[in-house]
Amino acid sequence: MKNVVVRQARDEDIRDVKRVVREAFYRPGKNQDFNEWEFVDQVTRDPGFTPELCFRPGDWKDTCGIFATAC
Image 1: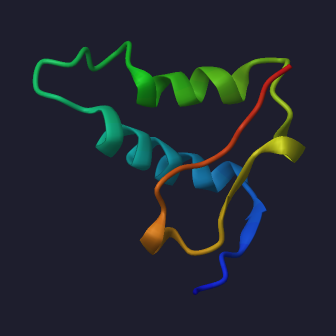
Image 2 (image 1 turned 120 degrees about the vertical axis):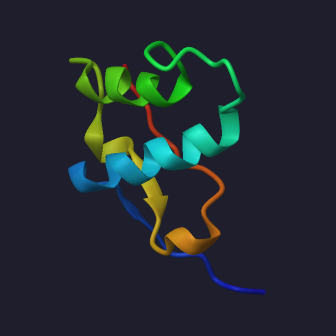
C-alpha cells in the first residue's frame, strides 16, 4: 500500500483544485459561470474560509479530491 502525503493547500493550488472539480462535475451544456469549479473560488474568498483547514495530496497525479472548510 502506498503512503499518501497530505499538506496544507497554498494559493497557487487553486487552479489545480478547480481542474479536479471540473473533471468531476463537467458535462456538456453546464453553465460556465455558475458551477462547482467556480464555487471553489467563492469558498476560498469567503471571510469564513480557514486556509489552515484546507488540505490537498502532496502528489497530484493520483488526486481524486481535496478537503476544505469554511466556518
